[in-house]
Image 1 (cartoon, rainbow, N blue to C red):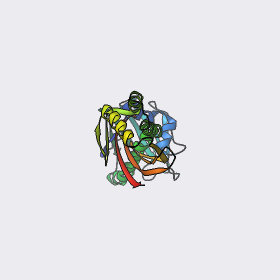
Image 2 (spheres, one colour; image 1 turned 120 degrees about the horizontal axis):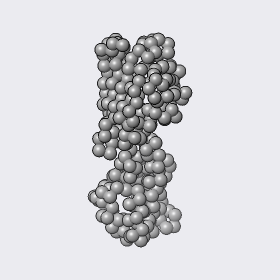
Image 3 (cartoon, rainbow, N blue to C red; image 1 turned 90 degrees about the vertical axis):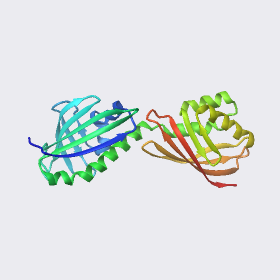
Length: 256
């Protein structure tokens, strides 16, 4: 088929190619970024179904699969409008970008006006896709955050460093009103100094973490040995693609 009109988009996702590609080949993950009931048979000639949350359906066939580099499939609406089933073609290419993945998206159409109708739709859908991928990559973010806070109560320097190393990158950065820290070694010593000035104080997470594409917000309180609240605030955690904490910025909102 002749498809002279192209829609192109490039996005970078903070996950490795193998992880990203699973969402094109695993039916359960495919449905996560399209909608319940969506399926794909990820082999040449395999059928795919996209069932949007509103009930609109897209039908197509897989043309090519090269793991973890490329997938090509046809695309069109079951209703025939604005384009019939299998009457356009989508190509998705994945390239390594350090520890992240650069996704190059192309959608080919026979009609220019139909191409233009899809621009915002794909801007939205690929953004949703990145969030779904990274929700899975950082499913353990709450545990890492709790590990970070627990390390601040560890009095033994060796065990404290081990605790921080389990959840943090070696060159982790920490910033707040009292801190300008780079690296686990410096952070380990910094926490020890904080304990000398505030003996027995511990940090506890309050409420669920809030995650978006590798950035996590976590509310916390400082508690005295007697259980009294001393201060509260919010930390902004940035995670690497491998799930380790890359940087933390702390904001104290109240102190008592």
